[in-house]
Amino acid sequence: VQLQASGGGLVQAGGSLRLSCAASGRTFSNYAMGWFRQAPGKKREFVAAINWSADTVYYGDSVRGRFTIDRANAGNTVYLQMDSLKPEDTAVYYCAADRVNTITTMRLLLEHDYWGQGTQVTVSS
Image 1: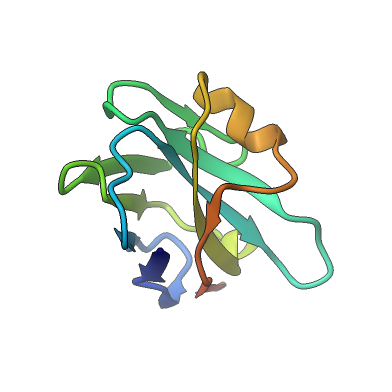
Image 2: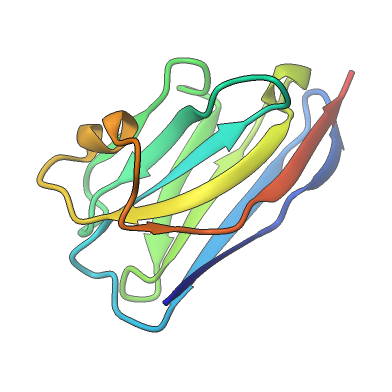
């Protein structure tokens, strides 16, 4: 089972990037999926989560209104559209999948059912 994140890169402040996370090895149709990020020297931060049916989303305070999470491919791919990027958004972004009853629970978990490798996002000023 693997979560493969991609789409990171270098972008100027105010620009946009779209991250993808493709799940393989099993179906994630009953799993919430989400994004986290970690900048150098900082703690891991919750970014966004989406439930298995893609009708409920939840965002961290620092990205709400700028980032959009969605999922496709029968729930096995999750996207993070990042607009109006700021230098403080610079971090390694990770995707995760959890079997939880409410997606808000994802931000509280110290460990996740599935965790992908990160993709670097760098926003220049």
